[in-house]
Every structure is written in structure tokens, then in C-alpha cells.
Length: 297
Image (cartoon, rainbow, N blue to C red; front, side, top):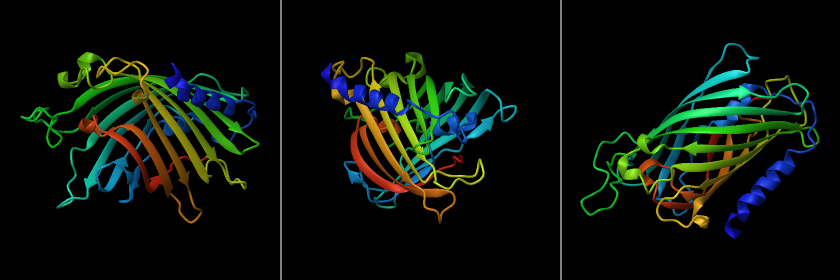
């Protein structure tokens, strides 16, 4: 049980940060809650630090298409055709097996008005594949990273709490959710070695400028995003409390005044590789790049 202490510490910090909020807030509409929960588009520089294979870049293309009746709707859908691409620093700079993660999510605003905190329920249905149709294994028994087929489908259910702290002039969010991959929704070869039940928790903070402009036009100067995932199911014969089940991501983002739509980020990631069929690789990396931040408060 001692190995689960890092998760407990994260939860305590997140809940403490959400206490004592003011009743007034800028830009806490439902569409902003949804956009925070979708991965931003980014591209990394060829200067990763860690054990990832040398890359020219990794790019995440993640536009979000909002589906709703009107701006004050309590129910909203988001369609996201997400694609992750890695270009390797090898001869001819190959792009190997991109990750295709199309998804549709539904958000429902539970609380609003003068409560000081907005609670939102969400559900997501997604597909994750690499667009290949080769054999999963090579003749030597190793996973076929070049052309092996990888595909799984999953749904995610969760809760997002959003609040505004006037003292810090920052918008804060806490998210907890379960990601479930039903056995019949994934390749047979993945069963038993790919986690089918994942518990996600995240804390986001957006520091707004001291001089606020018109509502709906201000972008955060800085943002901090802390994410932690615990693989909870029985796979790979892992011990139920091994620290290998904990995956963490810390992202720091800075938006300079002289740029409109992009900013710079530095990120640390620890855990199994999220790039489709490379899931057996374990990463400890620090990387740098540029990121789009579409949120306006």
C-alpha cells in the first residue's frame, strides 16, 4: 500500500487547491471545460532528454469540433479526430505507424450559478489504431513494430470540477475518470498485456494576466498541467501495487505576449509508451516544443 502514496499526495494537493474559491469567475463556460479535457495540438523540438528513440519531432493534431444547440446549453458534444505522428531521426526520416485516435465526447453541466465551482460529467467513446494490417508478431516472437496491426476501442466516464481563484487570478480544474477497454473491443493479441482499466486524475491551473481585457479574449500567461494514471487491472502478471502501474505527466506552458495562437512548453513524462504498438516500451523523457492554447477567458 505504501506504493500508492504518490497518488494520495496528488489528490490531497488538488482538493486543497480547489478550496476557498471566489463566487465570481471569468470564462468558465462548458466549452472551455471540454477543451481543457481534450489534448492540445503541439509539436516537439528534436532535443528530447531521456530514453525515447531520436526523433525529428512528435506532433499531435487534435482539433475539436463542438456540437451544441446554443452557447448556454448544459449539454454539449465534442468530435475530435486526433492523430499523433512521430518522425524518426533516421535515413529518409521515416514516419512510423501514426496513432489514430478519433473520439466523440458528451459533456453535461451539473452545477452552475453562484456555487463558486462548476461540476461537469462527461463520457467519451474512442478508437485507437495505427493503420497497419501486418502480423502482430515477427517470426522471432517479438512484436512487429514496423507493420504490426494495433487496434483497441474504449470508453471513458468522469467528472471535472472547475473553479476560479481571485487571489491567484487563476482558473483551476480537477478531473477524475475511468477508461475502460472491453475485452471484445480490442485485438486478441493485446489481451493480457495491454491495460484495459485505467484510472485518470489530473489537475490544471491557468494563470491569467493581471490586466484583464474583454471577457472571452484573454489567454493565460502560464499554465500547469499535472496528470496521473494508475493501471488497475490484472495484466502482464504485474503486482497489484507495483509502482510500474503509475504513469505521470507534468506540462508547463508559457504564452508570450508577442505570439497569438502558440506558446512554448516543457514536459516530463514517465510511464509506458502511448504511441500505439510501442506500448511495451517504458519512457522517462523531458521534451520541449510549441503548443496551441485555444482557451480564451
